[in-house]
Length: 108
Length: 108
View 1: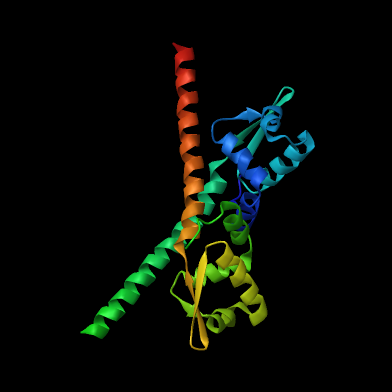
View 2: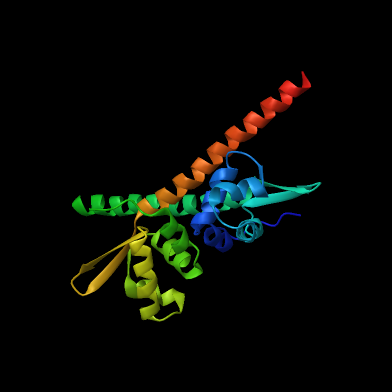
């Protein structure tokens, strides 16, 4: 069962440039761990470690088929982050509207 | 002049629960630093430190008027994060469409 991704873990995972590069590559389609490592110029062990953080935060899913582990983007993690940001922007827009009305009333 | 917020800094700043709590409060409207500190149950010095990270990452603006420093949400930082996430989701949707078409062609 998939738990709802933890917002803190998601943003922490997104704070690292290598993990963002992994997500940028995975957003173009699923690839194997070794294909993922190739353009990153880091060791396979480092990639696996980053993948673990991404998997635990709900941003990536991996599945082993025979001897190959394939990684895919898991939209759940991105959705949680996008929703948190959207909520802040909504509240902020409302706060600005409210301030605007207060100023209007002051002028009357 | 406002530089475009750095995506790594923005996500790093969002990874901390106290900084997210600050942004949640600021999204409801500008407040002074001491008003901000009150519900957080941390020292004023800690709040100031978090505010500095938020300001440097383009998520918050502060302005001093007389003896009071007022903090406001700065939507630029959130916009950069939202855009990065949106780009990933767009690419991913396209990748899924492409995979779907390949499977359809296979079946024919």
